[in-house]
Image (cartoon, rainbow over all chains, first blue to last red; front, side):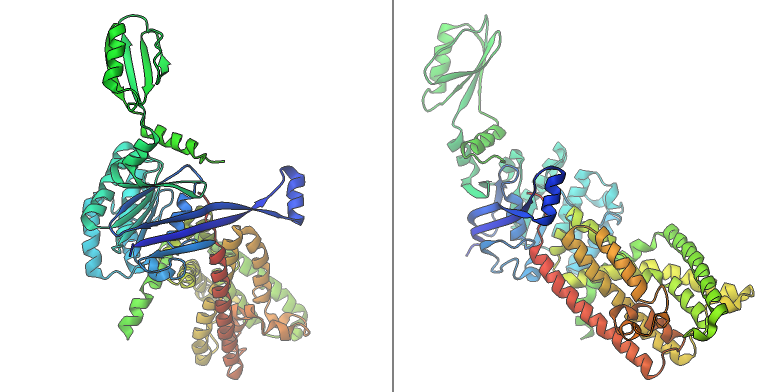
Length: 330
Length: 279
């Protein structure tokens, strides 16, 4: 029995439709027209305890809606959801006591209270016993290096500091599942690394099941063995990140600097992506032309000064994948 | 048994305490509120004095009681539910409501505890200042006729305790309905624009309800807002006593329960429709 089970999940919002301008506003007073927006059309997947799954997709794809339904905030229009044997939105109170949630764009700590007071308050709200609370809090404070921040009001923290405090806040009651909605958004590089390290540690060492949504492909690469891509409310793929990368883009790039002016190169299966006076960037599929063969062919005809092969950036892979499925935001 | 109920109440007490402590910080607001309430109290007393000077026989209560009524009202003004809790409006706009849904708590109870903390933290410092000024300083400077008097007897004082508790609980229940409308409509201005005049008139805050025309009084004395000001204050100066006082308390309690019940239903419905903004 998987820990999280999602079947044919759909969520439709009603959006008031209004003609532009004053006349439109006036007409809206008399008769309002509603337009259905399908945030989720038909999403199914399951997750075993201890897994780490990343949800990616363009803005408006339905990632956050999924997280909000799984965490019990929203009620789906149709479909079936079970988390640890509970239906989140039917059995909300029991369900939310077992999960932790971090929204990257919102704060669950009290703006005007020192961090430690917020933690105390959450311990009261989740009815965590004093002994257990002290142990858990000290553990999280050490893992997230929060000691120097504890007596500062939350409003004085930097975003990176606040995010670390938010993680501790979400985990004080020892949840077995952690939902993260864009946890690294807006963070600088060291803070992102700290968040990733922490999430990895939590998942590997403490066995916490993690479901995260993100736009940062480095998050995915660093953390997730499994990735679900969703676009326009539909599930596009579900599988290991590596297979997504190879299935979408086998393409490699060859960068060549020439001793003289760059030649007009024409070979079957090779396209010129960029050129400057003395250099070329070629794109090719290694299944069609092996790298060695291509390099040998170029070097045989021209004086080559420098040469290297790389692969497209992950962002590019994903953008191309969205294009392929026509999944970009309408 | 006691340990179990404390365990159950712990989150709600914590939510109340946090809000109460945070709000107590606003000393300047308390002082400003106190100054305003002194000013309005004085004006209202002058109006009453003028009225009693012309036609004292027509008045349903004595001038001394009317003066006490005014000061008591000014002292406890912040307990009256005339604006929705601003924290709720803010939580709805910023999406903090989502986090509220993530707490393993009764949603109504959680908001009720916070709203109660907000009301009492605003009211108590001002009430203390006002009791000091109108109850102690005024008699000391020789204006005893215009002062806030102590409860009329031991019985009135004892009955005022539950009346005060119920006026607070009822006020919070009214505010919760306002909060829920704010959360559902994403807008607090409209709610406050309707709520403020309703509360000021029907609670008896503007004028004790017995001052209104005879034809309206049967209605005025049974509607929910009477329990916010008119009933508890009349118990204070023993205008309501014995059976009538108990009836007043029963009315306060009944309306509190009804409004809490309505609030719970409304909150349930609102939360089902709740849609959080953003992808």
